[in-house]
Image (cartoon, rainbow, N blue to C red; front, top):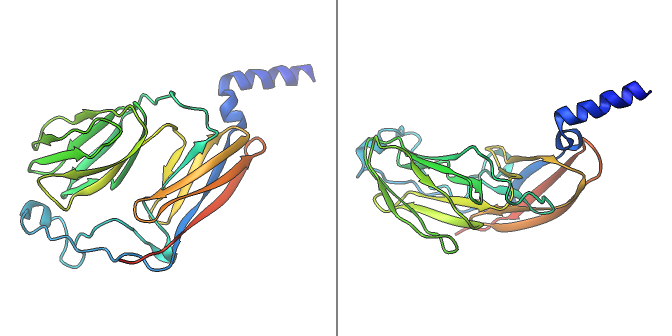
Length: 236
């Protein structure tokens, strides 16, 4: 018995307490009701970008990306209370690209003080302009073929970003205190992993429909809790 206990303790030291006790909160985000019709973007004034899109599938705005079964993509789901991981900043930088005169991705999330690399994959210049109110607002030109821009934000904030050269280019840089976040995929799915047992507040944010919250308790090792968010639709 003692040998088994020693082996278990050794395994805990190798793997770490978080991975041994980690739970997961996952689910899906949907919308119930009408949603704003996404507008076709006219890129005729920038032929190099316009050619990236077939005539049968022109580019559209992305303020509410609705999929099959009324699922919602690009919803930021994060632990807003209980994570206790403030200041644990990942060493890996988050990337934001400008391609086809769009932001890839439309919603980019990262942690406070985490490095961000902003690149330009288009054959022409862009001008990236995060409209920050809590963080420092800045506005930088980025010609084609230049090195990625370095950025960092020292306060949590949901920051709209635009290009002053191409007025249809809009997105969000979402700066969070926690590393426990997920941006819902094309099927509305999200997953928050590596959560020790405890009580958490989970917040879902969508740029058009606002925010929702749910309290969730992870009671034991390797437990998975499923929660869903349904936003009330509204048309414009």
